[in-house]
Image (cartoon, rainbow, N blue to C red; front, side, top):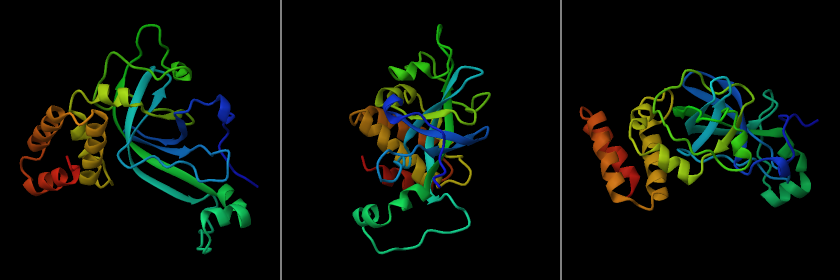
Length: 229
């Protein structure tokens, strides 16, 4: 029997709607990826990528960075085992495998945007177009997104808008239990590419890191070496 999250038909789902919050905390949330219609694994968001969700009570749009992802069996008692088959062979011989796995990811909250006038903040605007808020705050919001709230991939315009300032870098460097140096480098790499290799932005990001890590030159050098400008 397939155990899955209740979800809308794929045709009625926004194309950026990729997951649902299943565990939430002040500084981060855990989300389970929605199941694809075909025999394939749910799309795992890349390390250092940006996602967004909502706190319906306040109307705040929450921005977060993916720092951990995993695919495991839904049945926590039995582990997956090697079958020696290709993905195509799995589809033909063991199609039930795809129904027995779940993909989850953890995202560190980097900031939020309060609702604009006329926006109730419930995410309904995402049904037609991703929201582009006028105000951005790069610190922990009063509340995280609620359980069963939808999680969306951020579009490039949202990421570029959010990262005009650099306070989020301090948050990334303090994510507990995460490989924070690699996370910071991966996030900067993605933003740099989305900004069409804006050298001035990259230099300013490097200056901010040098201030935050002024007492730890080795960490600073390690992060800068992983950015690959």
